[in-house]
Length: 145
Image 1: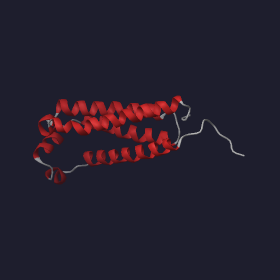
Image 2: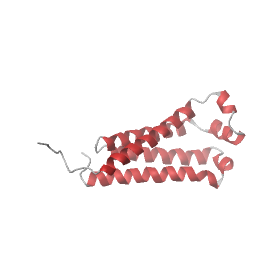
Image 3: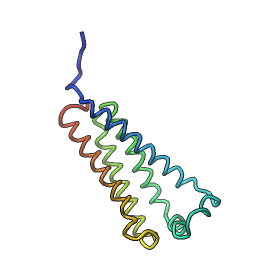
Image 4: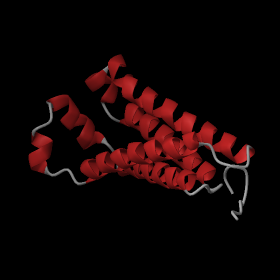
């Protein structure tokens, strides 16, 4: 005899959660590379990227941390079928917005990357929004507890 603690979860939930976790762990690795960059690695970057790195204030990196840690925790919440995935994805999205707005307002990112440089931030925002809406949908359907 089997017991169920809620509605059956679709297989897609597991796959979305795994992909979200991998995606956000890659983001966590990028964050780690950003905050641990030494002068030798910095010297290997093109001059415009060096200028952006050097002009980035600490609070932008804190926002980056909230974005990736919130995303990792949100993905774990999805995988574990927990409702707290939703607020974690909200934290992640907010961190991402603060990070990108800050980076483009207080660093020479626009001069370094131009309009083409917005492609990756837009992609990240689309994915963050999709994960937030998906986790809300899963909660509404009773798949998260």
